[in-house]
Image (cartoon, rainbow, N blue to C red; front, side, top):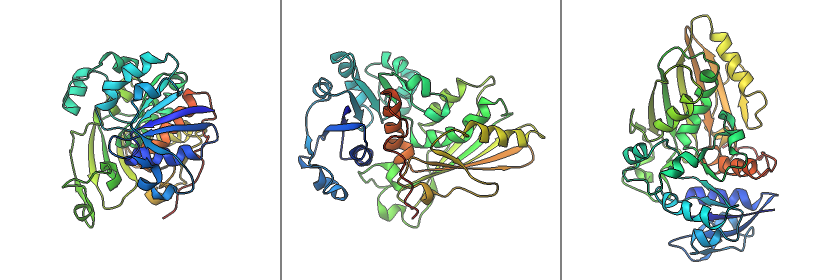
Length: 344
């Protein structure tokens, strides 16, 4: 059994990790920390009553590292950046999976630009493995000690773009439109994210300037023989869970069938990716609450339309984090993750 702890257990990421790990056949959850909560975990997560007797702890991550095999950081940006170095130093076998943006980018300058603060341990940016199993990172994640879990918009976009860049079929600048539910903004409401602002509303935000853009660029640059160029516009939608991406990708006229085949071949043996039959389009409710990815492909004239639906808290966050745990620790990659979406 892998003994794991969650650092930061009151947000949506920690909540979803808790739900998944309590049912995981190969993981024993030893601790769940909070800076603000004490007492039984189920007081904050009532849907888990009868499934756990854990209480929140305010133990420091470095102390938990001495008695656990793996720590998940489901904390705000900046926390893992400060604490991961000490965690990795105190126990030379412990692993860290960071759900924040602290170790996703290639350089300290990029981190400063997109997260508004200097990175306290820039040496770890090179050491971290960007954990995207379906997009070429599986071998790197095996045995990794520090895994940077991808951002939800970033992974949904990569799932649309990666097979085409990997096959060398992209001929120009792609356009990516991503739509996310309100849980992507976190558990703490703000003026632009709480229910009265989201309900019955739809809007773009951070167009062409979202912090997930350099993540996507970095991942695609590693596999592309041509400069990576795309426009990314995220949107806020009035549902709670899910991300829907529409990517319009230029391909050589006449190569549209080859592009469709590249996506089908790339995902043919991926346990969580379902390339839908011709003409069928992904729906967020079909993947909500799961680690599954639905992909739709429609060829045009010199363009491929690729649509992707994931659960932002599942495949976009906690589900991929558990998948990365399975790979990094030598477990069955699908362990604890094969439950289907809720359907509503």
